[in-house]
Length: 241
Ligand SMILES: *Cc1c(COP(=O)(O)O)cnc(C)c1O
Image 1 (tube, protein in one colour):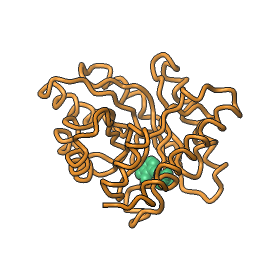
Image 2: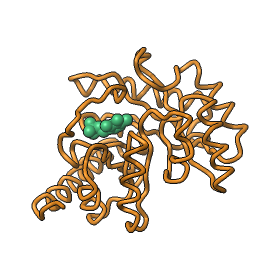
Image 3: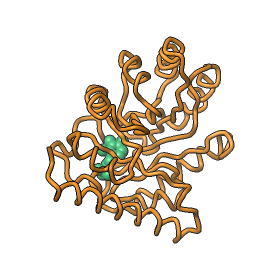
């Protein structure tokens, strides 16, 4: 359980983040409705998610399948809630993910896309996905390399249930949010080189510290955790960023 103070704090933070997104859109002449907020709830309790849901938030991002399973069960009564998978995904988790996710942001190989597609066939659904690109070419980070993107997209084009809707990235960690901008622009450039907006309408990029830069570079989905829910108990688990 959480107290009323916490509920109000989550609602107020959510509103403040929405205001940041709207201001960032205004600053670059975009419509606020073009940018959806994915509230990243990893390591935060069910009650905090429910507080955000009650304040109108619908899309939530989770990094770990175990946590996704637990939260989606605990919040099964929240009609219209959407779970977005934003963490590195192993193929043996495809079944659990396909049963619960509205969108997977982290497809980074043809094999993972194929595993998701098989599960979709079994469960009788289609699945919108994004291809994660490691634009910073960091060795420890997941995501396909920019020069592997064509191959992953081609493989996905041959699948009948997995639908690629766009690209996602997590730029190299930096103290200077402005440094993220060039990585966000790289992702937008890659999108333009692979069919443009009509083929890949979504760009998932931008977090608490750099969402304004992401909006400026064309983000349609921003993934924000800390600014909504506060600091996490485990700020940077292995493989997160
Ligand atoms: C944790 C996480 C976020 C949210 O980061 P904040 O800095 O808390 O906003 C966004 N995207 C991914 C992939 C994450 O792992």
